Amino acid sequence: MSPPSPSLLLLHRHVRTDLPDDSIEHKVVPLSSSKGVQAIGFDEAVDPMVLGLVLEAHLAVAPDLSFLALRGGIPFTSINTVDKNLIVISSTFTESHYREIFLVFNAIDSSLRVIPAVPRDLHLNRTSRLLAVRHHDDNDDIGASSSYSLVISGSVVTSISDQGFAEWHDVLFIYSPASLTTTWPWQAKKKANFPKQPQLVDTFFADEAFLFRGRGYWADLLCSVMHCDCRDVLSDDSVHPVEFSFLNLPGPRLTNPHGREAVAELGCTDTSKM
Image (cartoon, rainbow, N blue to C red):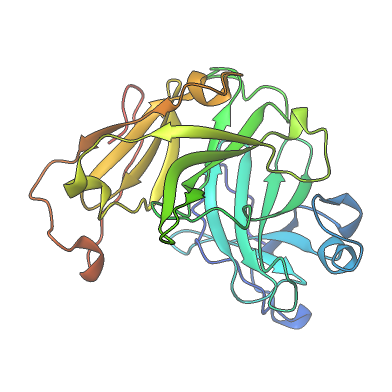
């Protein structure tokens, strides 16, 4: 007998892709079908492979973890970020020149959008986590199914000197499905301005990303959090950069946090992020 569907569940970050049909022990809830997959930014050769993906939820009884399964996917697949009705999954197609992709599942309409991960000229130097930015600050209502943008932070080369040295600028790339007018999903590119704090910037690499009260946060759980005003991210201003600030986390800061094994986490309360 299948267990009842829980009102609240914990998902394993790893997305399973190795499940034969005769080995399912959990309650399986189909989340998408191949007919509901929308591929954006791929050429005709890649489309059939992408459109064959099927997403499932395998629900477990506590204390076991539930997990997602992606049929047609490959082992290098995991949850990148979750925000209310959105689950963004990172995966890799080894036989495709696009290689890394994002799968965006929307629980409101059960849609599954598949897009290339990021522009080729973007260097992910501070995080690989996407930030899901809402176009409306609605704590109680998740709003329209397409009223969001996905934001990724990185750097691009803006010029190369006569001596061959590259000049890098911090930028944000943005995917907004509601306003998409071209076949390439990453339309917007905005300048970003990070504080001149080498001791933070040089070692910072965010493990988590979340939205809270109109501000976007990327958190390196072992040292600090960088944050910005989401109104600046979504504005039409292409001249002024998005200003970021750093917030140190309590406790001693590790001198080489990414070379050490440690566990940390952030959690939500009604009034703050802990």
